[in-house]
Length: 416
Image (cartoon, rainbow, N blue to C red; front, side, top):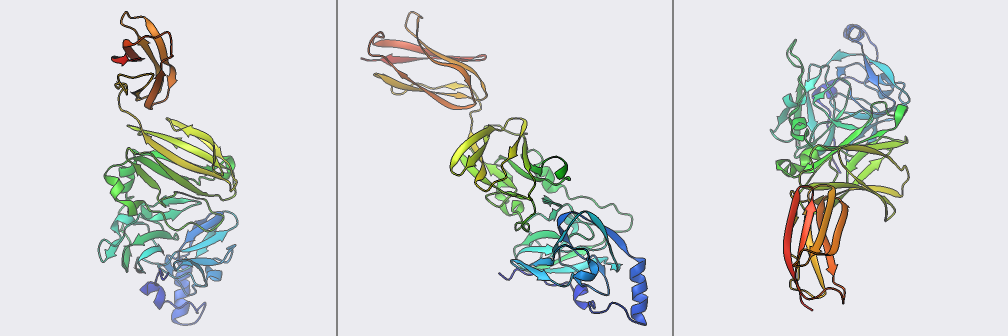
């Protein structure tokens, strides 16, 4: 693949070979020192960038305490000796710390991107993603993604960070500092669109969590389901980072009424993981988290309101989200076949978990059989009545379903 990020004009024209000098460079070096800033680095993998012009862009000069090489994305991860403006890089640290970057903050940058996924850099001030100029217009087809121990949708490009973005054609992205004293607004459009969806959250347990978590969203199909690129996730983080996504490679899934099972792919950062859920929208659909060991189902967790489980941190365990349609109201259907001998099937709908009874009566109102009596889960249900060879004569009978305040009776005919 040739999905490379070209360096910005600022980065290309800088002089990474200079670390000190005389005349102009002595003055520039003094200016760099004046503008020195500290940036937070977290334990593990970070997406970083150089938001300043500086004299020396070597990774070992800017990030001397890193525990790994710097990696840029060119269709795969490759090592980079220089941390250039306009490009984002993966860099690993052992422990949280603050690093100091010299240089003069960039007030704007024009970043060249190629078709597909790119890791872009930042400038010296936060930039609302909604204000980034696309050349040509409309080439960005994904969200902007930050990484802080796990992926999250970013509303702004923060100094010193790197960000994933996908474009449908080569072009340029222009980042500019906001006007003086103007607040940096967060781009909430997509967050608002997804705010009513159900949420799966995966995070390390207890003290190991450090605020790192990955969320997956799901719900009933609507207009959002046509925006598939907008919910696609970037390439998986390097080994050792937490990464959670649906098998579709998306962070949001939209379901219609048909039964469907979607895998959940989980890359662990080595810590024990907890998966929790918050249910906001379930109209007409039932959701089950299926836990498997190999091909064998070992647990099915019905997702209602909220709850959590501890994920098994072994390779042969897997998890899927199963969804199926549930009725919106109670209903009792006509038995089939009718007339019958000796077996007939009665279908009925239960829109919520409740106690259901179904009994058969003769023409005099005497109870002949009890077909259903107990707590049932929401769903499309059916029961079979297999009439014994003796004790029940041919004729007309009535079957009655009761569930809460719902009661309905239908007639059937037995012919022997």
